[in-house]
Each structure stands twice: as C-alpha cells, then as structure tokens.
Length: 244
Image 1: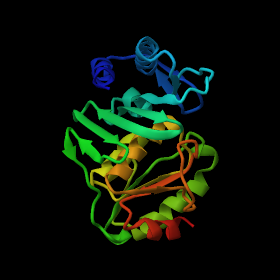
Image 2: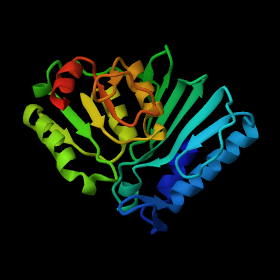
Image 3: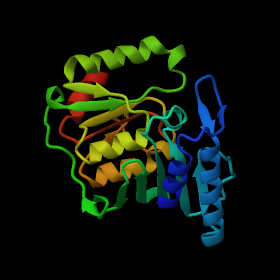
Image 4: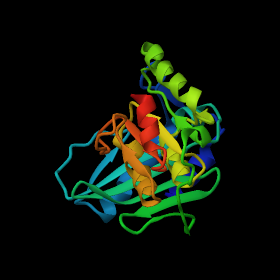
C-alpha cells in the first residue's frame, strides 16, 4: 500500500496521461501502473489467489482467497490536482473480508483492520464518533458517473439530508469517506453506485471501529451491492428514515 501511495505522489501534478472510460469517468496512467505492480506482486507471492481490481478484468478461478484492490480511489481528484485520493486493498477469505487497508499518501495515513481485531490509523486504535443525532452530524456522500442522467433523483436525496444534518460534504473518494467515518471525523456516508474495490476494505475498517454498514434501504450489505449506508451506528436509523 505504501508503494502504491509513493507512486501516486511521485506522479501527482506532473501532467500524467488521462483517458476517458465514460463521459465523466476518468482513468490515468497511474491507475494502470499501480494495478499492474500489484497484480505482479500477487502473481509472484500468491499465484493461486484471485484478484478483483478496477482497471483490468480477469476471469475468477473460484479461489478461497481474493484480493480486492483499487489502485487509485479518487481518480478525478488526482487528474484535477486535488489531493484527496488513496489506494484501497482487502483480502477476502471464503467471501468474507479478513483484512483491509486504505492508504492516503497526502496525509500519510494508513487505515487498517483485521476482522475481529479492531481498526487502526497508523497503529493507533480507531473509534467512531459519539454523535447521536443527524443534527449534530457531518455526513459525506458521492455521486455516480451517471449523475448527469439522473441528477434530479440524487439531488432530491441530497437535499433531504442537507435539511437535517449539521453539514454535508462530497470529497470524491469513497474509501476515504468511509475511513473518515471510522476515525470519527464524519458520522455517516451514503452512495448509490459503487464497486467492491471502492468499499471492501474501508467497510471492514469502519465496522471494526464500531460503525454500522447496510444498504440504503437498511438491508444486508456486501461489497457486490452497489448502494451503501455507513455510519457511526448511533445515527443509522435516523439517516435510513431520511433516505427512505
């Protein structure tokens, strides 16, 4: 993770190549380079493990161990020179996240968790905030790449939360959003269109810090589910009522 972050910082602000995967969905040469580096490392050390990552499709083998990796979460920020981005990595064993790590190289913050063993930031234990109402909460969200086609729908939900919360932010990195909830900097995060590499590691970190993770309808959440509501637990039901 540190190597990924070092590579991100080395290339940040240097005019790297940026391509489009969609109308507003970007990919940089750094996304590709970091993922290639990671895949080569796994192939050398754990050749019988599967890898699920953002930039290259591979056929799953059904291995019991799967690495879920985002080489650059916050690509749009990175491409525009905004220093809010990270690398995210989870190891799933038999379909359950066992270890997670998110590294923010701009702040040199390494968030880690092991299932059943708690979460840490640079080695220090993490704990979600004690704010018990949405009025006392700062929430954070993100918009999907299809937002321009469904702007009214997303703005309606955003407005409902905005009317009730102390503050609402939009940072541009789902993994950092979740980790900041785990660290008590925010009280909740919701988003309607995400991929496993965006959330697998950070959701484990949040849960191990004492938070709660569900779908936006309150149903069970797994990384393959695109929508997510993640909070400090204390405001979860209140946010669910707002989103509904």
